[in-house]
Length: 565
Image 1: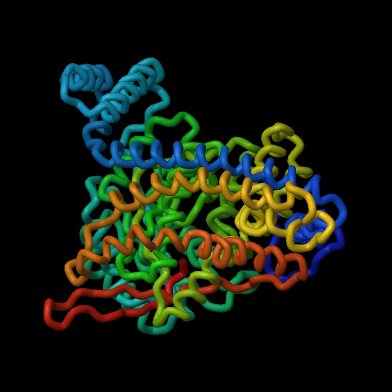
Image 2 (image 1 turned 30 degrees about the horizontal axis):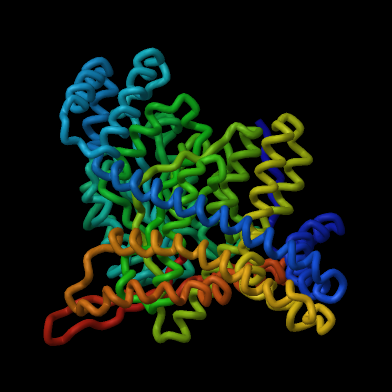
């Protein structure tokens, strides 16, 4: 086992070859965006057929995405209804568990989706019956929850910890670790100590761990904070002679509230996998905590991000870590915890683990939610700015492309096909993120506007019509998105009237605007900054807010905080 090259994303000394790799993503993106302008003069007919083919490609992709969204939503709905504690009990007597499942299957009124899930579960139990040696006893598994915080108030942190106490899993198997920053000031230290004192007795172990300010070689961000906490956790585990393979570490932001079933679901999944150490476990981030409060563009973005993760969960081979996720403590020890030199610690952790285990690593989706906040700041302009900065930071994951190229060359033992396909998926994801919305929106009009000679041809005038019709048909899938968004929303707060629900439907007319301005432009900004060596060397803290209903007469007010999200 060897360690992957620790390629920093702060402006350290760059070699000529590394700078070329950093320039490559932005260069290909800008070349692609410039190509319709160039071809409008040089080869307008070629461009017309390229545009039609590209639109048809995205029509096909849109159909596939809609199908996976339906499947993902149904899967999440069914898995949240599972009594995971019963399934954990089945692992101690598998034959009895099979009988119990078969008894339930004999009922005539089981919903079709739940019946299908029970059949899948019966198959899992039969497979485990033949391979009982691979099962880890659930009572030997511990969960360490690291909550990263910078300067959030008690109004934000306390609901997160309360959500942990509502878990269906035995709380003596949960360890609470509040990882706070020294640079956050005295108040955050007091808040962390207060919460440990107030809620610590609910958990098997609880601690507030301060990450020292100004540690050499670290970026200012979440990665160094949770890494420091992870090392302190390891000291505790070794002191108590607990096997690190028996400890699952889940990292949460200060506003992340796991579903009550999350830890039981994760325990069952971890206990039944033979390659448990070599897996990351990814729940579905749902940005619904304050979804009724945020402006319409932010609601569209938050819902879109939630649905994207639902769709990706139906393609586990494409998944990488995002936001809240879990790994075994032994895997974290092997990878030296999270990166302390990258502001993108979640997705980057996938690659660090992938190379540490020489390709023997995968992400296992968990079809249950970790509820998070949508972006909301003090006023519309600051909210829009905060949203753009957040998406720009997510898009800074483009820095993984040079990292992957370098390590693909270094690790000869990994299957050439596997590491190449993963690189191409990573590259295509960032490329499409920056280009697809802009190309679909504007490319069909360029030959008509820029080339007078081409205007005389029928194809020049038909091209925008053809492209528009293809895109219109593809947008029919938006109806599926709207329906699922409405039935998956949390209950409407009492301080909002019924017309707010109507706005939740009408907001989707903003989709083209939010996709171009916030998504494509954010990705373009990150890729362009990387091209010119303008590195993001500090974690951008996102300003957020929530609205609290005080009384029928007084209405609601805003509370603000800054969050590492």
